[in-house]
Length: 323
Picture 1 (cartoon, one colour):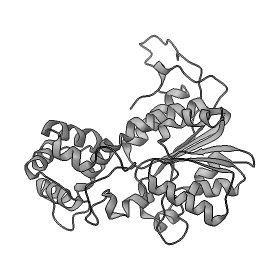
Picture 2 (tube, one colour; picture 1 turned 180 degrees about the horizontal axis):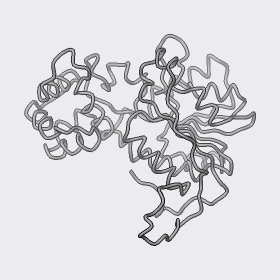
Picture 3 (cartoon, helix red, strand yellow; picture 1 turned 60 degrees about the horizontal axis):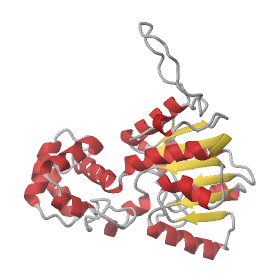
């Protein structure tokens, strides 16, 4: 979750581990697919790499341009104000056919969470927005127009909310909803929340609605496929995710791309993989250590998965991952 706190340069989650996984060298070309406040990009630039930073959030791009101006224009930082699912087309348009590394920090950023006006969190009341790109359907638009069944499905699928139908029924009954505080109150009441409980039950619903509004899981799958196509032999992929739905997609992508899935049953014919491994067997997942957790509690759910590209051609579209 790379974003600025407003009190100096932000240090993103698992920074040292991500940089070690990418192993940047002077002259390396690396994509920071989720630029945010540029925490990973700063470290990559310091290592001598050229960085192509992607972000669909206009606030992040404006801040990045201001940083470039105040820090002295750096020709090795190229900004792309677009979705990271579009990075294959964007890099080809920029005349770059292959890259040495891709890093992704998945999910909502600290910068977005900490701004009540963006509507991502319920810690402070704000408009029910949640749009990363600040355009298109907002959370309020969705909740105030979708039918109860659709809302329940979103809460169950993306928030793993077991009582999704009860919450959806309460949301429809309370419409119109305009603020994060209103939504949180409706969810808490539906689930019988009491102040002082270890976890606020509204968290799951906010996560689900945000993922739906931004199409986050489809974006992630498309970005992973794009990284596979862009990385050269020996190129490194590093992905930091913050909840099980994201991590499951990354884990399955790397398992399938490296042909390192579970062995088939001895009772079933072994037809073998349909493609050469396009990534080497991924390293073991990495989590934040105690020192980082003490410094940044938001790192507690972060998982880093990394792998290295082989010389095999990218898989055909029919064999790529989808959310």
